[in-house]
Image 1: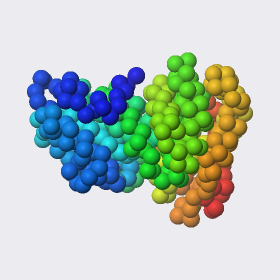
Image 2: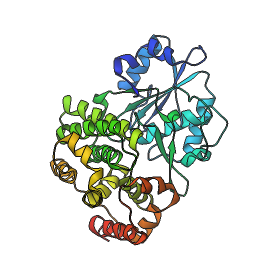
Image 3: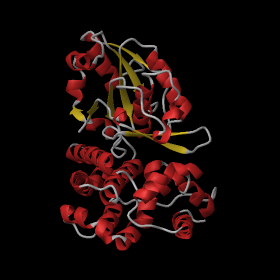
Image 4: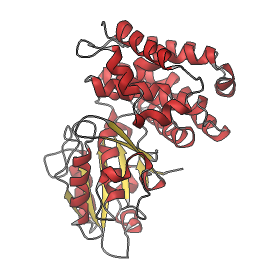
Length: 376
Protein backbone atom coordinates (compact mmCIF):
# COMPACT_ATOMS: atom_id res chain seq x y z
CA UNK A 1 0.00 0.00 0.00
CA UNK A 2 1.19 3.54 -0.74
CA UNK A 3 2.78 5.26 2.26
CA UNK A 4 0.30 7.71 3.77
CA UNK A 5 1.49 10.87 5.47
CA UNK A 6 -0.10 14.05 6.76
CA UNK A 7 0.69 17.71 6.31
CA UNK A 8 3.02 17.79 9.34
CA UNK A 9 5.28 15.07 7.90
CA UNK A 10 5.33 16.72 4.48
CA UNK A 11 6.67 19.89 6.10
CA UNK A 12 9.79 18.22 7.54
CA UNK A 13 13.20 18.19 5.90
CA UNK A 14 13.81 14.78 7.42
CA UNK A 15 11.02 13.19 5.39
CA UNK A 16 11.99 14.95 2.15
CA UNK A 17 15.66 14.05 2.58
CA UNK A 18 14.77 10.39 3.09
CA UNK A 19 13.31 10.35 -0.42
CA UNK A 20 16.35 11.93 -2.06
CA UNK A 21 18.17 9.76 -4.58
CA UNK A 22 21.95 9.41 -4.77
CA UNK A 23 22.41 10.94 -1.35
CA UNK A 24 22.39 14.48 -2.70
CA UNK A 25 20.57 17.58 -1.59
CA UNK A 26 17.02 17.39 -2.93
CA UNK A 27 15.07 20.07 -4.74
CA UNK A 28 11.29 19.94 -4.54
CA UNK A 29 9.56 20.41 -7.90
CA UNK A 30 6.03 21.66 -7.22
CA UNK A 31 3.41 20.68 -9.79
CA UNK A 32 0.30 22.59 -8.79
CA UNK A 33 -3.22 22.69 -10.16
CA UNK A 34 -3.56 26.12 -11.80
CA UNK A 35 -6.76 26.70 -9.83
CA UNK A 36 -4.64 26.83 -6.67
CA UNK A 37 -2.11 29.39 -5.47
CA UNK A 38 1.30 27.85 -6.08
CA UNK A 39 4.08 28.37 -3.52
CA UNK A 40 5.26 31.96 -3.73
CA UNK A 41 2.30 33.10 -5.85
CA UNK A 42 0.46 34.58 -2.91
CA UNK A 43 -0.69 33.73 0.61
CA UNK A 44 -2.06 30.26 1.10
CA UNK A 45 -1.34 26.82 2.53
CA UNK A 46 1.24 25.89 -0.13
CA UNK A 47 3.23 29.09 0.31
CA UNK A 48 3.26 28.44 4.06
CA UNK A 49 4.38 24.84 3.50
CA UNK A 50 7.16 25.83 1.09
CA UNK A 51 8.37 28.47 3.56
CA UNK A 52 8.59 25.86 6.31
CA UNK A 53 10.59 23.57 4.04
CA UNK A 54 12.90 26.41 2.99
CA UNK A 55 13.49 27.31 6.64
CA UNK A 56 14.50 23.68 7.15
CA UNK A 57 16.97 23.89 4.26
CA UNK A 58 14.91 22.33 1.46
CA UNK A 59 15.05 24.22 -1.83
CA UNK A 60 12.13 24.20 -4.23
CA UNK A 61 10.93 25.40 -7.62
CA UNK A 62 7.49 25.59 -9.22
CA UNK A 63 7.13 23.77 -12.53
CA UNK A 64 5.86 25.91 -15.38
CA UNK A 65 3.91 22.96 -16.80
CA UNK A 66 0.44 22.56 -15.31
CA UNK A 67 -2.60 20.44 -16.07
CA UNK A 68 -5.76 22.58 -16.07
CA UNK A 69 -7.70 19.67 -17.56
CA UNK A 70 -6.94 16.00 -18.13
CA UNK A 71 -3.27 15.69 -19.13
CA UNK A 72 -2.22 15.83 -22.74
CA UNK A 73 0.78 13.71 -23.66
CA UNK A 74 2.81 16.71 -24.93
CA UNK A 75 2.25 18.38 -21.55
CA UNK A 76 3.64 15.31 -19.79
CA UNK A 77 6.68 15.41 -22.09
CA UNK A 78 7.20 19.08 -21.20
CA UNK A 79 7.05 18.39 -17.46
CA UNK A 80 9.42 15.42 -17.80
CA UNK A 81 11.90 17.74 -19.52
CA UNK A 82 11.61 20.23 -16.65
CA UNK A 83 12.23 17.48 -14.11
CA UNK A 84 15.31 16.25 -16.00
CA UNK A 85 16.79 19.72 -15.68
CA UNK A 86 16.76 19.62 -11.87
CA UNK A 87 19.47 17.99 -9.78
CA UNK A 88 18.05 15.37 -7.41
CA UNK A 89 14.38 16.32 -7.87
CA UNK A 90 11.45 15.28 -5.72
CA UNK A 91 8.07 15.93 -7.33
CA UNK A 92 5.19 17.14 -5.17
CA UNK A 93 1.91 17.15 -7.10
CA UNK A 94 -0.90 19.17 -5.55
CA UNK A 95 -4.29 19.03 -7.22
CA UNK A 96 -6.93 16.70 -8.55
CA UNK A 97 -6.51 13.60 -10.65
CA UNK A 98 -5.29 15.51 -13.71
CA UNK A 99 -2.39 17.07 -11.84
CA UNK A 100 -1.47 13.88 -10.02
CA UNK A 101 -1.73 11.68 -13.11
CA UNK A 102 0.38 14.05 -15.18
CA UNK A 103 3.02 14.52 -12.50
CA UNK A 104 3.35 10.81 -11.67
CA UNK A 105 3.67 9.93 -15.33
CA UNK A 106 6.27 12.64 -15.95
CA UNK A 107 8.27 11.43 -12.93
CA UNK A 108 8.36 7.92 -14.42
CA UNK A 109 9.23 9.12 -17.93
CA UNK A 110 11.90 11.59 -16.77
CA UNK A 111 14.45 8.91 -15.86
CA UNK A 112 15.14 8.29 -19.57
CA UNK A 113 15.19 10.53 -22.67
CA UNK A 114 11.99 8.99 -24.01
CA UNK A 115 8.67 10.36 -25.18
CA UNK A 116 5.62 9.54 -23.09
CA UNK A 117 3.53 8.05 -25.89
CA UNK A 118 5.92 5.12 -26.21
CA UNK A 119 4.77 3.83 -22.81
CA UNK A 120 1.03 3.97 -23.54
CA UNK A 121 -1.01 0.78 -23.08
CA UNK A 122 2.08 -0.99 -21.67
CA UNK A 123 3.79 -0.95 -25.07
CA UNK A 124 7.09 -1.06 -23.17
CA UNK A 125 8.32 -1.03 -19.60
CA UNK A 126 9.46 2.10 -17.85
CA UNK A 127 13.24 2.44 -17.70
CA UNK A 128 13.81 2.18 -13.97
CA UNK A 129 12.80 3.59 -10.61
CA UNK A 130 10.87 6.84 -11.07
CA UNK A 131 11.78 10.21 -9.66
CA UNK A 132 10.37 10.24 -6.09
CA UNK A 133 6.90 11.76 -6.00
CA UNK A 134 4.39 12.83 -3.37
CA UNK A 135 0.74 13.26 -4.31
CA UNK A 136 -1.38 15.74 -2.37
CA UNK A 137 -4.99 15.30 -3.54
CA UNK A 138 -7.29 18.31 -3.43
CA UNK A 139 -10.31 16.29 -4.58
CA UNK A 140 -11.67 13.01 -3.27
CA UNK A 141 -12.38 10.63 -6.11
CA UNK A 142 -9.67 9.80 -8.60
CA UNK A 143 -7.55 7.77 -6.19
CA UNK A 144 -4.51 8.75 -8.24
CA UNK A 145 -2.57 9.25 -5.03
CA UNK A 146 -2.82 5.48 -4.47
CA UNK A 147 -3.11 3.95 -7.93
CA UNK A 148 -0.45 2.67 -10.31
CA UNK A 149 -2.18 4.12 -13.34
CA UNK A 150 -2.23 7.43 -15.16
CA UNK A 151 -4.42 8.72 -17.97
CA UNK A 152 -3.21 11.13 -20.63
CA UNK A 153 -4.75 12.05 -23.97
CA UNK A 154 -3.24 12.30 -27.40
CA UNK A 155 -3.49 15.61 -29.22
CA UNK A 156 -6.45 14.10 -31.08
CA UNK A 157 -8.27 13.50 -27.78
CA UNK A 158 -7.91 9.71 -27.43
CA UNK A 159 -7.45 8.79 -23.76
CA UNK A 160 -4.46 6.51 -23.20
CA UNK A 161 -3.87 4.32 -20.16
CA UNK A 162 -0.44 3.97 -18.58
CA UNK A 163 0.19 1.21 -16.04
CA UNK A 164 3.10 0.16 -13.85
CA UNK A 165 4.47 0.08 -10.33
CA UNK A 166 6.56 3.07 -11.40
CA UNK A 167 3.33 5.10 -11.43
CA UNK A 168 2.61 4.58 -7.74
CA UNK A 169 3.53 7.72 -5.88
CA UNK A 170 6.23 7.37 -3.26
CA UNK A 171 3.84 8.78 -0.68
CA UNK A 172 0.33 10.22 -0.48
CA UNK A 173 -0.26 13.24 1.74
CA UNK A 174 -3.88 13.20 2.87
CA UNK A 175 -4.67 16.78 3.84
CA UNK A 176 -8.49 16.88 3.84
CA UNK A 177 -8.74 20.61 4.53
CA UNK A 178 -7.53 21.20 0.95
CA UNK A 179 -10.64 19.42 -0.38
CA UNK A 180 -13.23 21.38 1.57
CA UNK A 181 -13.61 24.31 -0.85
CA UNK A 182 -14.34 22.16 -3.92
CA UNK A 183 -17.73 23.06 -5.51
CA UNK A 184 -20.65 20.91 -4.36
CA UNK A 185 -21.38 19.24 -7.71
CA UNK A 186 -17.71 18.46 -8.29
CA UNK A 187 -17.47 16.85 -4.86
CA UNK A 188 -20.32 14.52 -5.79
CA UNK A 189 -18.93 13.55 -9.19
CA UNK A 190 -15.46 12.89 -7.79
CA UNK A 191 -17.00 10.70 -5.09
CA UNK A 192 -18.95 8.78 -7.73
CA UNK A 193 -15.68 8.14 -9.57
CA UNK A 194 -14.29 6.60 -6.38
CA UNK A 195 -17.41 4.44 -6.07
CA UNK A 196 -16.88 3.29 -9.67
CA UNK A 197 -13.26 2.35 -8.97
CA UNK A 198 -14.35 0.24 -6.01
CA UNK A 199 -17.36 -1.29 -7.79
CA UNK A 200 -15.54 -2.18 -11.00
CA UNK A 201 -12.36 -3.48 -9.39
CA UNK A 202 -14.33 -5.75 -7.04
CA UNK A 203 -16.73 -7.18 -9.65
CA UNK A 204 -14.55 -7.40 -12.76
CA UNK A 205 -12.88 -10.55 -14.00
CA UNK A 206 -9.67 -9.50 -12.24
CA UNK A 207 -11.28 -9.26 -8.80
CA UNK A 208 -9.51 -10.69 -5.75
CA UNK A 209 -10.30 -11.08 -2.04
CA UNK A 210 -7.79 -8.35 -1.18
CA UNK A 211 -9.26 -5.95 -3.71
CA UNK A 212 -12.79 -6.67 -2.54
CA UNK A 213 -11.76 -5.81 1.03
CA UNK A 214 -10.40 -2.43 -0.08
CA UNK A 215 -13.49 -1.84 -2.23
CA UNK A 216 -15.99 -2.64 0.52
CA UNK A 217 -14.22 -0.26 2.90
CA UNK A 218 -14.21 2.45 0.25
CA UNK A 219 -17.90 2.12 -0.59
CA UNK A 220 -18.88 2.08 3.08
CA UNK A 221 -17.00 5.33 3.71
CA UNK A 222 -18.49 6.94 0.61
CA UNK A 223 -22.03 5.95 1.50
CA UNK A 224 -21.62 7.13 5.08
CA UNK A 225 -19.77 10.41 4.47
CA UNK A 226 -19.94 11.60 0.85
CA UNK A 227 -23.46 13.11 1.14
CA UNK A 228 -22.46 15.17 4.17
CA UNK A 229 -19.23 16.24 2.46
CA UNK A 230 -21.22 17.30 -0.61
CA UNK A 231 -23.53 19.36 1.62
CA UNK A 232 -20.51 21.27 2.88
CA UNK A 233 -19.73 19.54 6.15
CA UNK A 234 -16.04 19.55 7.01
CA UNK A 235 -13.96 17.60 9.52
CA UNK A 236 -14.84 13.92 9.61
CA UNK A 237 -16.98 14.09 6.45
CA UNK A 238 -14.07 15.43 4.40
CA UNK A 239 -11.47 13.18 6.04
CA UNK A 240 -13.37 9.93 5.64
CA UNK A 241 -14.53 10.71 2.11
CA UNK A 242 -10.88 11.23 1.20
CA UNK A 243 -9.96 7.98 2.93
CA UNK A 244 -12.65 6.19 0.93
CA UNK A 245 -11.19 7.59 -2.27
CA UNK A 246 -7.73 6.37 -1.27
CA UNK A 247 -9.05 2.88 -0.48
CA UNK A 248 -10.81 2.78 -3.85
CA UNK A 249 -7.51 3.67 -5.51
CA UNK A 250 -5.85 0.71 -3.80
CA UNK A 251 -8.71 -1.52 -4.95
CA UNK A 252 -8.18 -0.26 -8.48
CA UNK A 253 -4.58 -1.47 -8.37
CA UNK A 254 -5.76 -5.00 -7.68
CA UNK A 255 -8.79 -5.41 -9.93
CA UNK A 256 -8.79 -2.81 -12.69
CA UNK A 257 -11.85 -1.21 -14.24
CA UNK A 258 -14.65 -2.43 -16.48
CA UNK A 259 -17.54 -1.11 -18.56
CA UNK A 260 -18.00 2.03 -16.47
CA UNK A 261 -14.58 3.35 -17.40
CA UNK A 262 -14.55 1.88 -20.90
CA UNK A 263 -17.60 3.88 -21.95
CA UNK A 264 -16.88 6.64 -19.42
CA UNK A 265 -13.52 7.41 -21.01
CA UNK A 266 -15.18 7.30 -24.41
CA UNK A 267 -17.86 9.76 -23.29
CA UNK A 268 -15.20 12.17 -22.11
CA UNK A 269 -13.45 11.82 -25.47
CA UNK A 270 -16.43 12.62 -27.69
CA UNK A 271 -17.98 15.32 -25.47
CA UNK A 272 -16.71 17.81 -22.86
CA UNK A 273 -18.04 15.73 -19.95
CA UNK A 274 -15.75 15.66 -16.91
CA UNK A 275 -14.36 12.25 -16.04
CA UNK A 276 -16.22 11.73 -12.76
CA UNK A 277 -19.50 12.80 -14.33
CA UNK A 278 -18.97 10.52 -17.34
CA UNK A 279 -18.18 7.49 -15.20
CA UNK A 280 -21.18 8.22 -12.95
CA UNK A 281 -23.47 8.28 -15.99
CA UNK A 282 -22.22 4.92 -17.23
CA UNK A 283 -22.38 3.39 -13.76
CA UNK A 284 -25.97 4.53 -13.43
CA UNK A 285 -26.82 3.15 -16.87
CA UNK A 286 -25.16 -0.27 -16.49
CA UNK A 287 -24.85 -1.34 -12.84
CA UNK A 288 -28.20 -3.16 -12.78
CA UNK A 289 -27.46 -4.71 -16.17
CA UNK A 290 -24.14 -6.19 -15.05
CA UNK A 291 -25.41 -7.20 -11.61
CA UNK A 292 -28.33 -9.12 -13.11
CA UNK A 293 -26.28 -10.53 -15.98
CA UNK A 294 -23.32 -11.65 -13.86
CA UNK A 295 -24.67 -12.06 -10.31
CA UNK A 296 -21.76 -14.26 -9.27
CA UNK A 297 -19.42 -11.29 -9.74
CA UNK A 298 -21.26 -9.31 -7.07
CA UNK A 299 -21.67 -11.94 -4.36
CA UNK A 300 -18.43 -11.37 -2.47
CA UNK A 301 -18.56 -7.58 -2.57
CA UNK A 302 -22.18 -7.44 -1.44
CA UNK A 303 -21.45 -9.90 1.36
CA UNK A 304 -18.48 -7.83 2.56
CA UNK A 305 -20.43 -4.58 2.32
CA UNK A 306 -23.64 -6.00 3.87
CA UNK A 307 -25.88 -3.21 2.58
CA UNK A 308 -28.05 -5.05 0.07
CA UNK A 309 -27.90 -5.17 -3.75
CA UNK A 310 -25.15 -2.91 -5.01
CA UNK A 311 -27.28 -1.21 -7.64
CA UNK A 312 -29.64 -0.12 -4.87
CA UNK A 313 -26.67 1.08 -2.78
CA UNK A 314 -25.58 3.16 -5.77
CA UNK A 315 -29.06 4.62 -6.34
CA UNK A 316 -29.31 5.68 -2.69
CA UNK A 317 -25.92 7.36 -2.83
CA UNK A 318 -26.82 9.38 -5.93
CA UNK A 319 -30.12 10.38 -4.34
CA UNK A 320 -28.53 11.29 -1.01
CA UNK A 321 -26.03 13.52 -2.81
CA UNK A 322 -28.83 15.26 -4.71
CA UNK A 323 -26.97 14.74 -7.97
CA UNK A 324 -28.28 15.29 -11.49
CA UNK A 325 -26.40 13.12 -14.00
CA UNK A 326 -27.74 14.72 -17.19
CA UNK A 327 -25.29 16.20 -19.73
CA UNK A 328 -25.49 18.08 -23.01
CA UNK A 329 -25.20 15.42 -25.69
CA UNK A 330 -26.00 17.63 -28.65
CA UNK A 331 -22.41 17.57 -29.91
CA UNK A 332 -22.22 13.83 -30.51
CA UNK A 333 -24.29 10.66 -30.90
CA UNK A 334 -24.51 7.02 -29.86
CA UNK A 335 -22.53 5.81 -32.85
CA UNK A 336 -19.56 8.03 -32.05
CA UNK A 337 -19.71 7.00 -28.39
CA UNK A 338 -19.76 3.33 -29.33
CA UNK A 339 -16.82 3.72 -31.71
CA UNK A 340 -14.76 5.39 -28.98
CA UNK A 341 -15.77 2.81 -26.35
CA UNK A 342 -14.74 -0.05 -28.65
CA UNK A 343 -11.37 1.50 -29.58
CA UNK A 344 -8.19 -0.45 -28.82
CA UNK A 345 -7.24 1.76 -25.88
CA UNK A 346 -10.38 0.60 -24.03
CA UNK A 347 -10.05 -3.12 -24.80
CA UNK A 348 -8.58 -4.10 -21.42
CA UNK A 349 -11.59 -2.60 -19.64
CA UNK A 350 -14.04 -4.30 -21.98
CA UNK A 351 -12.30 -7.63 -21.40
CA UNK A 352 -12.42 -7.16 -17.62
CA UNK A 353 -16.20 -6.61 -17.65
CA UNK A 354 -17.90 -9.66 -16.07
CA UNK A 355 -20.53 -9.85 -18.81
CA UNK A 356 -19.83 -10.47 -22.47
CA UNK A 357 -21.71 -8.17 -24.85
CA UNK A 358 -22.13 -8.54 -28.58
CA UNK A 359 -21.10 -5.56 -30.74
CA UNK A 360 -24.77 -4.72 -31.25
CA UNK A 361 -25.35 -4.72 -27.47
CA UNK A 362 -22.45 -2.33 -26.94
CA UNK A 363 -24.02 -0.08 -29.56
CA UNK A 364 -27.42 -0.29 -27.85
CA UNK A 365 -25.92 0.62 -24.47
CA UNK A 366 -24.16 3.65 -25.93
CA UNK A 367 -27.27 4.78 -27.77
CA UNK A 368 -29.31 4.39 -24.59
CA UNK A 369 -26.84 6.50 -22.62
CA UNK A 370 -27.03 9.31 -25.14
CA UNK A 371 -30.82 9.26 -25.20
CA UNK A 372 -31.41 8.87 -21.46
CA UNK A 373 -28.73 11.17 -20.07
CA UNK A 374 -27.66 13.30 -23.03
CA UNK A 375 -31.05 14.19 -24.42
CA UNK A 376 -30.12 13.11 -27.94
